[in-house]
Length: 298
Image (cartoon, rainbow, N blue to C red; front, side, top):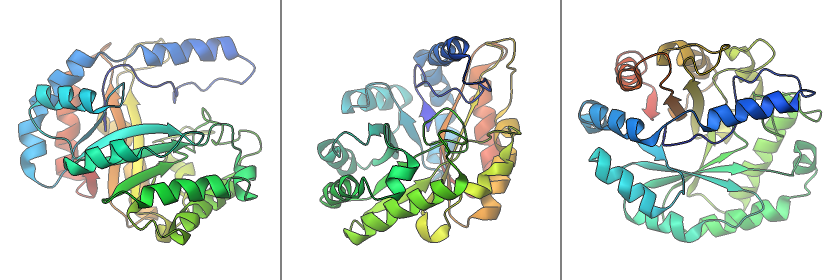
């Protein structure tokens, strides 16, 4: 998805020790302030005729506010309807039945990024939250249409509680938790829910794509592979301008080797400092069309 406006704070470029929280908070703030809505909209307008109308690449967006009004405003400005609309939801909340139904009725598939804040992988695997997961599945089942569920995303990074090397987390624990979620949804008959397994384009300790395969739960538990990646430009002294291809190439090839499922670029955006953001987005779609036919949506 194109990320509209200020980014939600999960700093993939923050390779900082846990004992330095003040610096980490500064990086989080920098990431939140990175992107301006007006130029993202302009860039999307420039790329729309070449990519969105080609017929095979689905388009989506995350917009602050996560409501129909925000989606309407975005579609009006870019001039075409979105195939996907990204929502972020905490496990503590209820399933967004009404919003999901409204989106589906207008031809837009909701992608729900489901974040287990306050719930450890160990507790999920122990069955502590089975009732909570089942209840979410029961509510999702009542919606007439396809829902994409993206649980515990960017697990190969170290900025979420369910991520790498946090609180004793391991790839095996993550895989088990992902499989448990999928199995419970299936047990409730929520066949309209399709699952997006969604690593970041890189992660510790080497900050490349090599750890991605260790978190993969298997094609029988996954319907789509999602990838996140951002061009931070020169917003900080320790970041640089990077093309879509530089950011995603290794992760895309790695994902293609471990899974046969279609790929969605679930989160991507570019900053402004250090280059031309509109040109960056146009180049991203050129690369996708030319080199990555397995990409199903952006």
